[in-house]
Length: 324
Image (tube, rainbow, N blue to C red):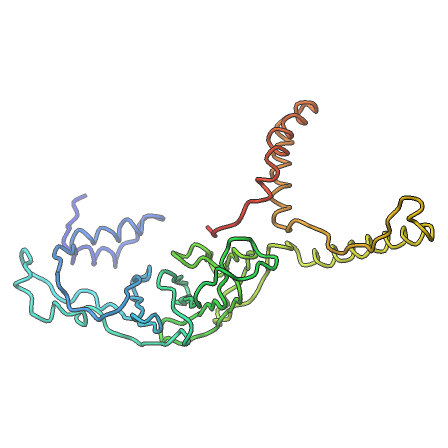
């Protein structure tokens, strides 16, 4: 069947006909055969901003001020000029070389405080609600005390995530992390899936799961790291108390003068060393995978020695660096 390829005929066909299921995107892309940008304008007068990106739906242009304090959002005006024949920049009016001819500023919002800076490489967009997630942070401290954190990882005094409604620039909610380190460059430490947000704390090896509600609230769902389930901490504390009570009972049964019997009495220590819950899960996964490879018991033991126990310390030293 002969089809006309001019844009008027295609618009008419789109209104009166129904395409086959799963082919709507293919038919929509055919319009690019009629509307093809074929001219590049150079030396456009642009504001002195840091330009981040245009959102996936093409509705907003995200920019930051040069001092990393303010968020500036523009809306594209899209097709502003056209040519009948081959387009030449000399045929366009002078205002075609102005930034304002293609983008209109919606608002300018101050996000960072006096000692914080906007991370210009971080931005996540929730297209369903047109929410934008931005991050501000203080400078890194490489001499911070470890205190249970991973050695060699710097500390940031304050990291703040800002959830904005891009339509009007209203800050809906904030989430702060103190004395932590999250890799914000190119969204490496944060991952957005539907309405769930995963934030990886590299310093404390914890994955924080948050939910972005339709109302614009950031709700804590779960933290996976030292503990994986809600009752893990309660179970470990109760087990520790039982072990301490058992040790104290043994000490009370010792002779009054244990030195004569070659015994040295000491107080029970409460500093039991446990691997984190997520590290225990990883080790169990690796162990069971190697265990199920060999049906023979003797070969299974040999395989565990070579593949698991020999590399055990390497597995323990693994560090989570990014969320993907």
